[in-house]
Image 1 (cartoon, rainbow, N blue to C red):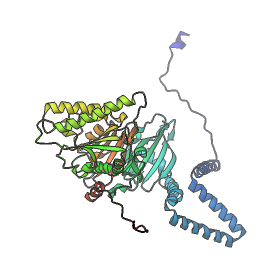
Image 2: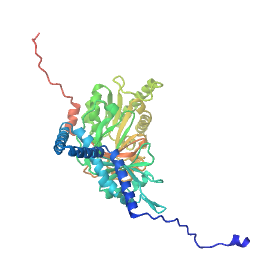
Image 3: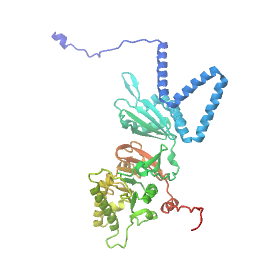
Length: 480
């Protein structure tokens, strides 16, 4: 027994499973059945494909009854489609064009070469001799973006797909790929493949919305062709961009959509322009308060900025006293409007102030407003060129952050948060010829959104501050 227990061999143990031989016909039949089942599942899940299949079946049945009847029904169907496109172009786009585009791009562009694309991108894996690839779940398209939802393999993360986004863009012929997580679907990831860039053209000011405070201010166009809205109530907004990046487009787009609300009494704009009023003076008729610095002030040039900020803190304190125990979020009204404090260059208030007393007053008031003001209806909209902490120490107190063209790649994560550039926010690569293009992040949403803000010209500003007088109407009747 001792000799038996001490005996060992260095030769590896060969374990081989028995081979099961299957005929070529049976293997081919299995492959065809799997493909047909997959086609049936995708067709059933795609309304446009299902409608096309039913149309083919119906046409075959009508042809068997009477070819003339089938041709008549075909002509009637084409006439209805032309009529729908002419009368309801929006419904034509949503009901037919986009579903058909989603279906054929899903099959011809993505599913056809998906296994090879996953292999070359390094997202496929081999386990026990079988190659496993992520599964395409759905493909939905707009006129500029294909949204491909994918079920990830076990052990994969969203960052794995973000790391190879440039490879996927090259493989599928997209100009860029954005990688997004899916809410309440931890095993899913959504790839946004940009096929056509709608942001290369100048965006005209978007129509003013009467429900802008509740639904959001329509300030920009997103790269998927939809309108991007800024939720201003309950949020502070930070705009960062290099010289000529389009910070003025953001501020004036905001003022353009706030103007009707200012006239109705729901919003009061307090403007602070440390550049001597050069940037915001054109809109002074809209402002309840306008501080632009006074070189002749006895207390110093920056004292007027400190006074406005401290007055805003006083408004905040009074509202806190009234709303304590009543509500957690202020609702704007004509009796108590939303106070929007617009600061054109925050660095002039936080980093470049030479008067130490004024600097301490400004920093204290600004810190209180950013940490406590948004819940009681006192929000700050600030623009700055340099996002570093020594210039803007309160950078993280802005829930909504907008990064226009930046000078350095490191600044992207400083503005939008860690990992933003890895998820496609290449604000440092925005060309000089695309002012107003940038990326937006909101607290609670990890994925940045690429947008272009509307171009507000001097003519638009002139119309903004000069309300149109209603035309006189002739009324029939006799003079008194």
